[in-house]
Length: 392
Image (cartoon, rainbow, N blue to C red; front, top):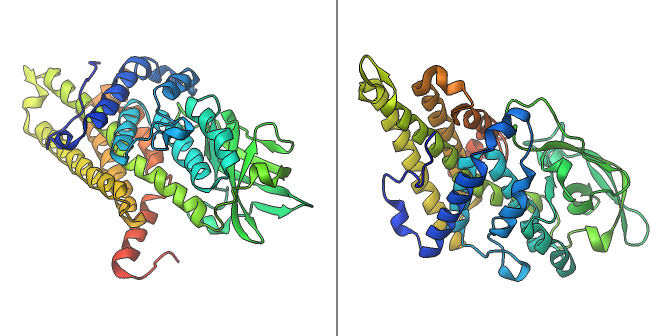
């Protein structure tokens, strides 16, 4: 497979990038080309996460990249952060998921809702990749309805909390040094930092996946886990606003990231179509293949422009959750369709690990329904435009 040094940019959206934003994208692309692409297929086949990439990602500032430099982070704007997610997912959804969970779902809530002591203790270590975090919200029986969670925390004497419950589908869970666990309390939903090795806490890895195979997915089991309030409880938020605001940070990154997977498949299909000879000429010369490629690049371009405007709104602090839902919903959908079209262009070769298409396509089947399913995001937009909730 050829190594592509530039992203697909049919409408020249990169003309609107600052020099810093261009540098972030170029740095991330070089990292993916040199360190991710040579090994990612092997890890996907073996169902293992390439942990050797964590330290380099930390050194390059990829973890918690949008948070302030005060805590050892890169302080990137929303557009630069989105481009980073684009390039990481061009390598693999599992790589982007690792960075997204670490930054948007663990570091961001610690920064936004944690005490200064919690920030100073965790953020620099997480930014360097010296510590790994995970986010515990989804439960075996409650995904799209987080308000139904059964995990519960109760006060236990002076300054202590006791947690019981189970979380499911947790990225990074089995390798995490700290889990941000959301639990119901008498005061409302609260967030707790649970360190690895705490008695009663375990994170068994989930096996047998056909998707996100180069990513760690786990359960979190909490059995009478006793926590110190000062060290563990995030003091700055109560209620579902806490976890849902974190999800909006992650969904923003996914809106960009999914396009990176789509770009990888489009470029692969385009290159293949121009070099694959049938009936004495390249298949790119046939109308049906050109139709597929034209649709692919059009949908990719529309997704890029949607993400670009979303980034502008986010940097101006004008973005709404429903706008983020639209970008996540649309861009993951079109990315999955682009991957499927690419597979048809490659035909039988499309299922081989020699090409990235089937791996990206399988990954995006998960991205389609995580961080809010496609259907739930559709209803969020529906409620926004009609003023009527249709969730139940």
